[in-house]
Amino acid sequence: MLQLTDAFARKFYYLRLSITDVCNFRCTYCLPDGYKPHGHSNKSFLSLDEIRRVSRAFANLGTEKVRLTGGEPSLRRDFCEIIAAVRENPSIKTLAVTTNGYRMARDINKWRDAGLTNINVSVDSLDARQFHAITGQDKFRDVMDGIDAAFDAGFSKVKVNTVLMRDVNHASLNTFLDWIKTRPIQLRFIELMQTGDGGDLFRKHHVSGEVLREQLVRQGWQLQVRSRSDGPAQVFSHPDYLGEIGLIMPYEKDFCASCNRLRVSAIGNLHLCLFGEQGIPLRDLLADDMQQDDLMDRIQGGLSRKKQTHFLHEGNTGITQNLSFIGG
Image 1 (cartoon, rainbow, N blue to C red):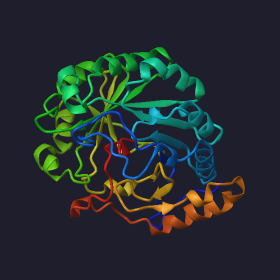
Image 2: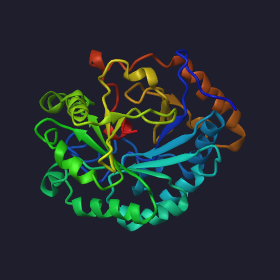
Image 3: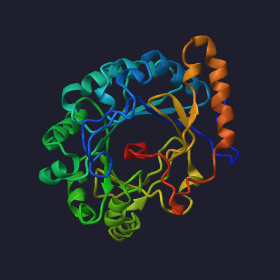
Image 4: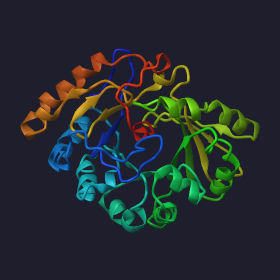
């Protein structure tokens, strides 16, 4: 089988596929003023057939894992059909979703029946009032019920994404640890990033994941081995805990050395780096099944332009507006 490889010998097994830009939450670090269309309507996002074709091309190029992202992917009325379309590819071993969780309690069984294998839920606080303040939605209980429903539906593990913010949740590690002590949850702290116009928020609330890493090591947590299709989290386990802790630290030295992910946007552009650039258009090659060879050639050819690093250390924020892009 073909395998996507760049000029720095990095191999790419993992595709993050955005299926909508729309989100119904108003998280302070992401969409504080709510979703704005920016010229895109629901009809301009990739269709079911286009998603089927692009996922088939990546599967033929060695992709083993696909994550459906947004915005909030479950807002798509054809979300279950999208899951089934991606799972038509036998080489896609893992099909995950990153969701805000508000529909999980109602729909998780349908998602699993359609072929979903893994789930990530965003939960930035275990305090209902603070959760409301961060997300703009009074949905904390709905999300917690959704996580319980995922376990009831047969998911053996749920990943929870928490954006690490100074004076918001960075001092709540012990509260989170108590929560995962008897639950098979992999709780992943994501460093707050400077995205779009969020410079003031970044300067006020950014704290390095190293602070938590040092605390975890002191408490006996041990770093686990990363597999080739895993996301960028450094995952720690402890013999006394059923859950795990992951740290995603994009500002750490050599973060890009193990990059194994590419992203396709909701309007069909291939992004070689999750953090920026305008992307390589693929949509003109998604109209017909007969274009598969040309589509694969364009994806492969585009990798020659992938840079060695994301340049976040130099203040580059690219076009990234949504932190769901990095929660692998």
